[in-house]
Length: 189
Image (cartoon, rainbow, N blue to C red; front, side, top):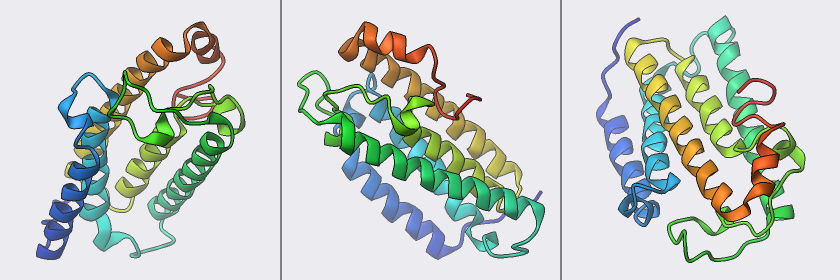
């Protein structure tokens, strides 16, 4: 495992994308009690891993670590598409005064339990988790491992805080929904 320094272009990309994340997360960053606050830092961890390992994405494409990486990245896309589709199809949307920092699609009026939500409660965070480790496997390094572990911890914290928010909004219905489902990965976690 080796440490690969960021090039000027990757460093510039990191700064530019961080500024975009700061802009879209500006409301959440004012409230450390909301899930969006910690989600910002998870986004930063994913961004770091993607840019850190970018030079290795297409080297030795049939190496076992690359195959694992592409499988994780593909599953990440599927989780994201299915999660967003189900939120739009079944969730509805309503502005909530108690969570003004949420994005509109997060403020569902109906608890979504179909599709991928039948198996996991947070498919978008599951998608970020798969993206994190998919990016990590592009090039194994100590800095990548640390970033992956920290991002995983942050995503877990984000999930726990969102669970609390969902319990407050949906009540016992959400409590019952939690029992047969996992947080991020079907049948596993």
